[in-house]
Length: 433
Image 1 (spheres, rainbow, N blue to C red):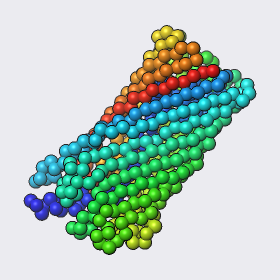
Image 2 (cartoon, one colour):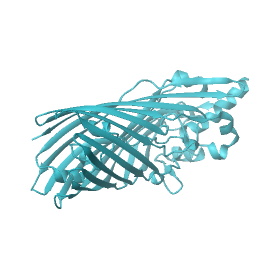
Image 3 (cartoon, helix red, strand yellow):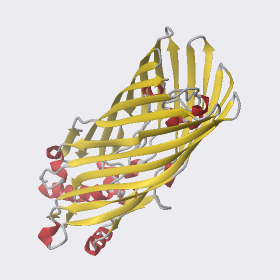
Image 4 (cartoon, helix red, strand yellow):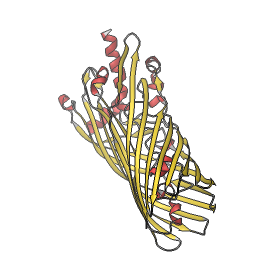
């Protein structure tokens, strides 16, 4: 029995370091509490301070200066269990309760009757998870290690919009992206030598753009479309393995990798069939298959030659992704109970771009069914909005025997049963001058 457990530890540990991958939720679903509460379907409406993120063409219809701020708290709740034949359930754990903050600030200034300038700072991407090392000791030679991940991006977006006529506006932003990536986990093993704690912290910059058009044939209906260009972020940082020095090896190395935030195309409409009622719907396509190289992997370059040799020897110098393109469906509504009070609700289907072949606990992927709700209050030029988002992840399962008997298919995966739900409350304040 003990021998079987040692074999299990060795097999599972081989894939831990090599399965560092990004998750569904790499991009946040919503920015701005009003848009969030309406199911994140805002490309065809784009008429409040968050428009610079959703559809910069919406700026063209602004007649006065506007300013707004938005804050959100992303609270994931994940679970993981592993059952092995003869041993039974050896792991049953949940993520540590933790918050991942996001936000937005934007300002708009009409330069002329038809030309409007805006600038926004926002977090389009951000998620992570933290696990209790003691619960994962069956994978780490009974030694507790830190298991956590965090990925985020901050975008600085200056933009312009030009209203061609009373019905059509076009707009664009320059997206200056600053990305951050941190991870801590067990560094695996070499034979029966425990390599200890692996940590890595990277940052980097990239450039992209957003182009949009908004058409309002009448006061009752509007249509919008946007294209977000790919943005290659060159991440650089430092990685360390705690027990490398015991073997006479360097304990740390500089590391770099290029991450391609993919092309995104969105389209939507807004319809006002009754007084006070607005119905919205969006479709969003993301080319996740372009996240890595042609093989679907992200290459890691270690500056230290010893690190480069050992990482290549263990097949840990690349991050296997092999994602597929995905299309989100979003819908929502807003009802003005009075001229000052608005009620909102929505739904979103967000399919996982990754496959079970690259599943792991640090940044896992799920199909999310998401419900949203919120309310707004307006007094004078001030608008206060509350939003709430609940993402229900569809549980995923990779049985141990399926994983163990198909190493060519599942060699980059982590066996077990996975689940995650995410709660996202938010608050927005905006003002029209």
